[in-house]
Length: 287
Image: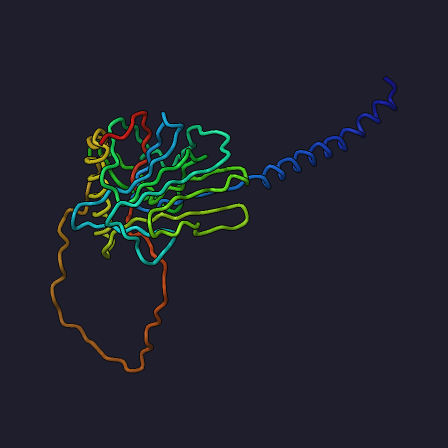
C-alpha cells in the first residue's frame, strides 16, 4: 500500500471513532427517553417476600402487632392514618413487562435477606402484591443489631425501595382498598413514586423505639416465618428497666418576654427503627 493511502486511512480513523461515539450516545439517549422509573417505597414494618415460583412476584405485608403495640399506616405522606380496622390490600401492576427475573438486591440488605419455606401473611394491616422489580434497595442509615443465636453484629435498614425500570408506555396501575386515593405521591419527568409507611401508633423515645422494633421483629419471625426465628431473632439490650431520676428542686423563672412557639404542619415520619426481612421462597404462603 502507498504511504499516501496509509496516511489517509489513519486520518479517517478519529473521525470514524467520533461518529461511532455520537451514534452510541444518541442510541443511549433514545433508550433513556423511552424508559420510565417506578419506585415503591416501603418505610417501616414491612416484610418483602420474593415468590420464585410465581415469576419472582412480590408480596409485601405488615403483620398486625400484639395488643398494646399498635401500628398505624400512612399512604403517600398523608398526615392522617388510614383505617386499618379491616386489612387493606393493594395490587400493583405494570403493562408491557419485558421480563420478570429475580430482582437485584442491594448488598446493604444482605444481613436480612433470608430463605424460608414456612411462612404466612396472616392478620396483616396492609398487604401489597407486586410484579418482580428490577432491584430492591434502601435509603438512609442502617441500624446496628445483634442476633441472639451467635451474637453476630449486623445492620438493618429502615426501609425498602422496590425499583422498576419499564418502557414509558407501561403506565403503573395501582388498585387500592376502599377510601384510599390511589394516585402517586411524587411524579416528575420519567419517575413515579408511591410511599407506604407503617410505624408505632404512640410516641416512643429513642430507647423505647429500639426496644419496640426488636420485640416486634422477633414477634414476626416467630409467628410469620417460624423456620427463621431460632437463627435470626434479635438480642434486646433495652430490656433493662430505665431508672427514673430522683426528684430535685430547680430554679424556675417565668419570662414574660419569651416568644410564642411557632407551630407548623409536618408530614408523618415513621418511628419504627427497623424494617422486616427480605425473604426468598419457593413455596406458597401457609394458611
